[in-house]
Image (cartoon, rainbow, N blue to C red; front, side, top):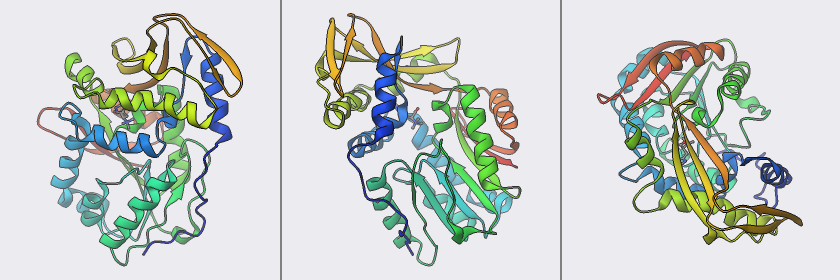
Amino acid sequence: MLLTHDMPAARTIDPAFRRDILAGLARSPKATPPIWFYDRRGSELFEDITDLPEYYPTRTETALLAGHGDDFATAIGAGRAVVEFGAGSARKTPHLLRAIDPAAYVPIDISGDFLRASSAELASAFPGLPVLPLVGDFTGTLALPDAIDGLPRLGFFPGSTIGNSEPDTAVDLLRAMRRLLGDEAMLLIGMDRIKDRDRLIAAYDDEAGVTAAFNRNLLVRINRELEGDLPVEAFAHRAIWNDEKARIEMHLEATEPLHFHVAGQCFHMKAGETIHTESSHKYGARDERLLLRAGGWEPTTEWMDPDGLFALVLAKA
Ligand code: AVJ
């Protein structure tokens, strides 16, 4: 059962997009928030990334979800409202829903088109489960649907999306989830582990160039939605491992001196200068637990693949 009353229609121009991009390009070094990757095309490209041989997180996490259903049933139990943060195509979710038999499912995503399509699919796969999609930025303030009032909640935050946030912001986000989900809540969160540097870089700089297209699509979106004239082909995709901060950084590097316009404003870049478009933080075992505790969650169980690539952590409020 798919209930879509409060969903706003898809918009082409987002004032927050304009504000974030203009501020990010004016900054030195230039840096833009990764949420703006996910227009319709960006969401599709991200789906393609998840199928790449080099991109281990999705298939590793999906195998964990598919393989530990009995554990989830015991540790989480039935009758919760599952609130998924950044649901996207929600391809991992059926494994979890089948295991725990929840009372409702609330997928939240910034990409409305995408969310509508995946919610409809999920609702038909789980007849009788109320599916209540919410379009919005879960890093901002959100209100959960009244329909789940009184139900204990399970936050589901897969994909190591938490890794997009700097540690201070990640803590704020976990605390906001704790507040949103309430005292009885649990959180099932995916966290990507620190590993071999070459393996990490390959996952963000694949042979087929899909991640490069995903990164450059931000420029395409800026040109389309903010009257930009960025020369997309003059930007090179870069993925670097920042060991000090234990994170992969994606950048778009100007391959020659550039000047361009966005929303009527003029910008310049030197050859070799970059726009820092994403950070993807990786965690050690203790980092995970420290981060969760700082965010108001007590870790209770962890599941990991035999190679130690990716961890699924269950925590309680
Ligand atoms: C969706 C944020 C988890 O950091 O691995 C994949 C996004 N960027 N390839 C990640 C992403 C480039 C992804 N997250």
